[in-house]
Structures are given as structure tokens and as C-alpha cells.
Amino acid sequence: MSGQPGEAQVAEWPLPRNSQHMTAVTIPRPVAGDVVDLILDDHRLFEQLLRDLRDATADREGARAALSAALIAHGEAEERDVYPVLRRKDAIDKHEQEHGEEEHAEGNQALLDLLECKGTDTQKFDDAVEQLSEALMHHIGEEEQTILNPARTEVSEKTRQDLGTAWATRRNALLDQDCGSIEFVKKVVARAEKAGLLSSDNDK
Image (tube, rainbow, N blue to C red; front, side, top):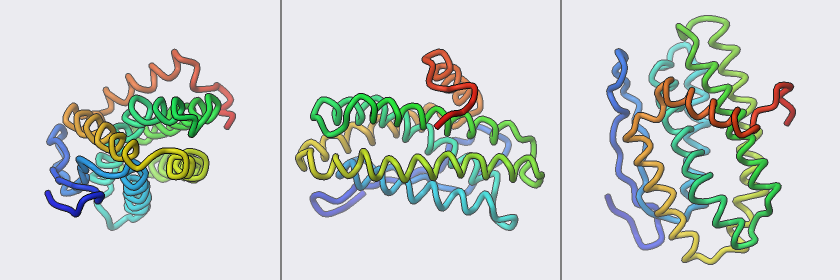
């Protein structure tokens, strides 16, 4: 673990060996840095894993497990540690916070549909990948414009660094809890349904 002051400090560990599939995919685990940069790094990781999920020659099972773990840990940490502080600092408003949480819920539902696919070489799997990709790419685009840009301009560097540490700490703790397992994802989706974050007609 190393880095110049102000740069993200990263340690890497493999995914938990919780399933019969032993994946070689490694999820970066930053421990400090500007929260905007750390979140953007995860967005680029999601995009790479989605490309792998579309590639019949890639380790699709490994990519699915890695994306599930990283996506759940990322979103949960944002909702607990980042969005509330940005709202208190008036960088985002109530609507932007709630919209971000709704889009997390929609992405997590699409993720659950992907996890429930029995194999990785079926049309059902390919369709589930595209549904997740659509939800995720929509959210990434909106979050980078309506949440991360205000965080850059309306929040001090110290606050962004403090948020980076808090976000990374929770994200890593969730990864240690095997948050990408289908059982964990089902609980997250059920909680979102109970909170009214998932609409039956899937309105954006």
C-alpha cells in the first residue's frame, strides 16, 4: 500500500472463496483518497466487468461474482456515508439523494436477476447482462453529473478526503461480509422494496 499524499491508497485482496467457482478476478480495495476519485475508479471497474460479462471468452463467472460484490459494497457505502454528508453540505438536495438511492435499487434488482441465472452461456444470461448494463450505465452517467460534480465544487478537499476514508472503510467491511452473495443481494433488494424504492412499472 503506497501513494503520494492526496492519492488513493489501495490494497488488493481476492474475492472471498464462498462458492464452488474459484475466481481470479481481484477487486481493488482503496483505503483512502478523494471520495470523487474513488467512486469514479469503481465506475470504471463496473464498465470493465460489464465488458467481460459480454465476452464469451472471458471468465464470466468471475466477472459476475466480482461485479456483484463491488456493486453492492459501492452503493451501500455511498448511501450510508456519502449521500447524507453531501446533502448536509448542500452539495445535493433531497431529490438527488433519493433518486440516487432509487437507481441503486433498480440496479440491485437487475443484479439479482443476473445472479439467478443458472449458467453464463444462455440467452437469459445475455439478456440479464444487458438489463443490468442499461440500469448501471444510466446511473453512472447521472451520478457523475448531478452528484460527483457538485461534490467537486461545493465540498472542501478535506471533506472529500474524510468521505473517501469513510466510504472505503465501509466498502471494504462489506466486501469482507461477502456482500456479493445471492443471499445478501436478496436482503438488499427486499429492503429497497419495503422502503418503496422499487416501482412495479420500473419508472426511471
